[in-house]
Image 1 (cartoon, helix red, strand yellow):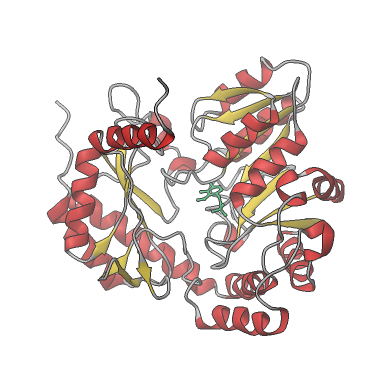
Image 2 (tube, rainbow, N blue to C red; image 1 turned 90 degrees about the vertical axis):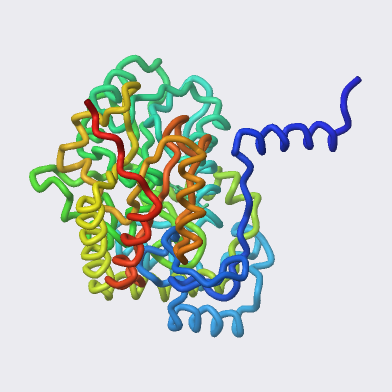
Length: 416
Ligand code: PMP
């Protein structure tokens, strides 16, 4: 007899619990700054994507409040009906202007943007060539589109080239994250763009974790590019989010006129979804202004990243992307300048779920919130602490985290 839905789900949940894969949400009281209260406990937040410290910026919050007083709380409809407010239009113009692209188009979230864009651009008979560690939203967009998917080894342009060469006769779309969200490493974008050009493939880059941080703020596809002699990558489709370094919510795609107009017609997650509140767009405009003008936020953030990495090195704690082969070694390619994690995402790969969970709990007892990231978010055997640094942290806080890590994380066994 088929079990009731409740009985079936209870069994599934118990199995997750057994495997230490059950996930709990924490309740944050107050605003999302560095000093937060989580489940009633005050602690320092080292697992936020608010890389420039703008999510709790009083100026950005006030811009949102002022806009809400003028435009209300909701957009009331999808963009194509009556939900496209002047605040949205202005933000799109500001984003296009900042990136030097003809147009930009807002989506309610980065997840919706990626799913909607990929599904609109390719379909049955076409091929998507994708990095093995692409974000879930890129994977789901590929699934939904019905295109054939060919996955290449992480951050390996040679493997991408092979997959592009093996694609069928339809359109080819190469899709990659710029900064990998759980590893903090960079895609070799210039080499990937070259491979795509050789095979007449279109290119799409998800710069959720690069926009605002890399390229002086303009992201992973803007100079100064980490490898000086590389040509600056210019993907056909550039996506970034507004809920991370911009400190608001939502996402945008930037590109040519035809791309944007086509997506307005065909991206189902835009056409059939309520536009974000105009006040959110106003907050993003204010965040974008800070992001453009406050170079000190990036300078401070990069100082903290260097301090954290130096500190880990002194403690014998290995910071890396956890991209290991079966023998547990990181590939030599990670030593190239492109792979050096110059990003705020600093993963400490501990291996087992139990180790990652225990370290995360021990850190919280010492007042540091660093979440344990477990499969399926990361590959089996690579559970990790995902430390993220932001411009809102200070040097003392980073030193405090390092001292806590010294207590809570065992350095890896030396390899014989
Ligand atoms: N792309 C990447 C690489 C991400 O890490 C995320 C979310 N963390 C998204 C897209 C989705 O963005 P959003 O949170 O705005 O839905």
